[in-house]
Length: 547
Image (cartoon, rainbow, N blue to C red; front, side):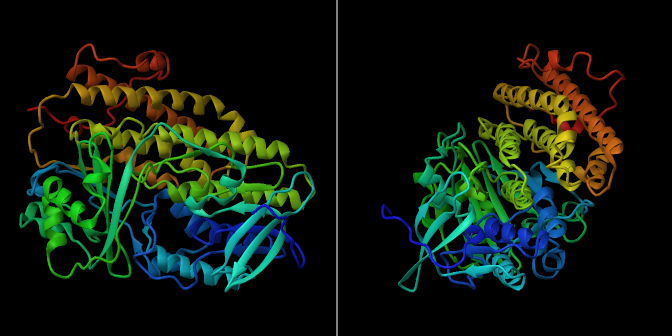
C-alpha cells in the first residue's frame, strides 16, 4: 500500500498482527503483566475456528508447555480440554510391518514434567475468549491492508479491513505474529534463508490411531503403562524422513511426513493419494491403519522449504516479530511453541521497560543476540542430520544427547524465569560457549558415525526406555525446582558436566564402532573438562549392535 495510512481513534499501546498461537498468547501475557495496557489483536480468520483440521504445531515440549501452563496460567484448560502427552516416541521401522520387532525409543511411564498435545483450533478458540476476557481488543475476521513503520518516538499505523469497511489504527508498539504471511518481515525485507532444507505434508483424519493395535505380543504390549503409546508424539523414522502421529482431544489424529528433499522429493507425496502410496512403501503398518474404516480425511496440505530465519526480530523502534513470522526451525522436536514462549517473554520485557520510561535500545540489542543464538544453536540439531534418522544405532544416541543439551541450560533458565536476567546470563557465557561447541562437534560425529554404518542392524526388539535412565529422569524432574542464584548456577554447571561425560562416552563408542572416525574436534574440547572419572551415562544396549 503506497498511500499514507490515515489512522483514526486513540492510539493503542501494542498492536499485534495475527491472532493465532503466538499473537493471542502475547496479548494475554501483556495484559496479565499490566492490566492497564491497551492491546489490539488483528486476525484474518473469523472466530471460532474449526477444531482439528486447522493448523499444525500440535505437539508441545517442556519450554512451550511450561509457558502455556504456568507462565500464562492455562493448565486447567490443558488438563481438561487437551491431551496430556506421553512423551516423544520413536520407531525405527522403515519398510516394516512388524513394528513390534523394531527398535523403539520412548518412556514406559510419564516423566514428571508435563507436556500436552494441542488441538490448535480448540486451543486458539479458548485463547481468543481468554484474551477478550482480559480486555484485549480482539478484531477477528479483519485483514491488514497496509503498514507504516515509524522510527524514533513516532506511532506505527496499520490499515485494516473488515466486512468491506476500511479503517486504520495507530500503536506505539507493533508486533508481527502473522505466521508465514510475515507482514512486517516482507515490509522491512527481513526474510532470511538458512542451510536446512526440508519439506512436509500433513493431514488430519477422524479417529485415533493406536500403536498397540500393531501387535498381539503380550510382552511388547506390557512395556508401557497407561496412558500408553497412542498419546505419544509417535515418530516413525527412516533414512531421510520421519512421520508424525499426534492424537487430538477432538477425536482426530494428525499425520505428517517430513523429509529431506534430496532423498524424498516433495513431488512423491504432495497429494493425499501420493502420500498414502509413499506410506505403503515406507511405513506400511501406519498406512494399513489409515486405510481402515473410520479414518476419513479432514484436510491435506504441504509446505516446501519450511525452515527459515529472520534478519532481525526486536527493534529499538518498538517493533518485533514472534512465532513463525520470525524464525522457524523444524518440527522434529516440536520447538515452535518454545520459541513463541521465549520471544513473547522478550517482547513483554521490552514493552514493560518502555512503559516505565526506560531506554530499550540496549535491551533490544541484547535480546536479539540471545534469541538468534538460541535459534542458530538449535538449528544444528537438524542441519544435515536427516540421513541419520533411519539409523537405529546412532539415532537413539543422538536423541538422548539432544534432549540433554536442551534440558541442560535453556530449559532451566526459562523455567526459572531468568531469560531476561542479563547478569546471570553473562555469568553463564562460558557454559553456553562450551556447550555450543560440544553440540556442533557432536552433530558432526553422529553424522559421520551413521555414514560409516553400512550394514543393517538386527531387528532386536529393543525398548530404549528413557524413564529408566536415572540421570535423564532427574534432569526432567529438576526443571520444576525453584532455585536461588547460587543453587541455579551450581545446577547448570552440573548439567554441563553431565554433557561432558555423555559426550566422552559417545565418542568412545563411536571410536569402538569405527576406529579412526573423525571426531570433529570433540576430543580436544573434552580435554580437561571433567576432573573426575565419568560414570556410565547409558547402558551398552543403548548403542546397538551392527549385524
